[in-house]
View (spheres, rainbow, N blue to C red):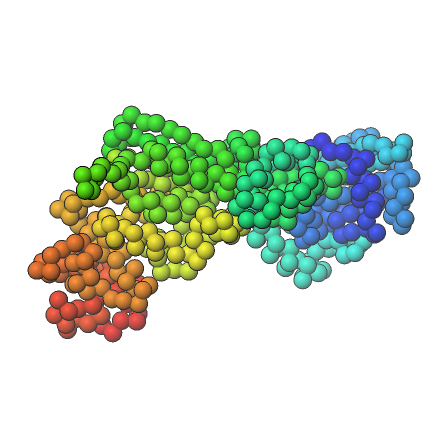
Length: 491
């Protein structure tokens, strides 16, 4: 939303451009309403192509030498068929686009600035026709198919991280809102010297963007990663990780809730410290010494939390990651469905909904760089012989459940099938097969108990989770693969 702005400073900075741009036009007097509507459409679309936030029409500046000469045009007094000019324009611009006239004076001379927001999702049309700027001229968009194709591609690929979280802040306010100190620590680079150098470093990372009037906008990426308090960012107030600890196995149990509000990069260690304080521990004795071990594997918990932060649907308003800790499990819910089949988390190439955020957190070592987080989760769970995690899609949300240790006798049929399937996926990506022996090792079965291992394998085959590589072999010697590899299996 366009808001208050330092118009004199903006005009002087715009006048420093050597010529008119496709997103910038200078005028000395008023133009006809029809032509003005076409220009607004053209500039809004040009702004999107230039990957900027706003474009401008400035009255009172000579378009040749950019000298401020003043103007007699007053948009507040202009009527079109008895209708106010801005109201007349807004009814003919589709989809609705944000534009606003500002009256001010620069060096004692009256100026008018029309600020036009860039097209968002669809090209802006005036009277059902989309326009574009070609140099300093306004033309129909469909007369320039290359420009039209580029515009659609850019509109289709706009991402949440690049959008503005907080507009019109001064440099000092940026440094108050963003934990820039943590950025330099995580990036492992020396702290920049001076306010301007710090701001320029944050802009290079696309955390902030300098406005045309010299002020700053904080982008969603910068706020998500380094906000000192996400509650200070209106569009991100529901994005902090909410952590709830229950005293029993259900949500009816007494609960304790915490919500670290720092950004995901600067505050990830805070989130993990909070979880580690709240998770239940098992008491063990070794050589007469008492030791407390977390009930859930630390690496697996860390990876699941990082995945929830990174892969959530950031456009889902009023919803953020929810971490619920029970006596026997941890449930992690994040808005948005997975971009790949949850059954293929281990084998499929990595794919992120929020690539800029994911790339940043990979740099800082918060998540895996090669998409092997689920491999690590599966490996740790296998070593500890825990039940396999459960992945569910519930009303446009993804929920991952990690379980505490459970005796084999207490595992259900579904638990066993899921464990065999996860084992098969892990074996496959390591270029190994599943056998009766590997299943005995997975469940901690005695070598003499091959019949039970064979039964577990038969259950997984019957459920369609795995396939055998050779149906003519005896059960004890048959090799198995995940079901999705069956195209390469000689059945």
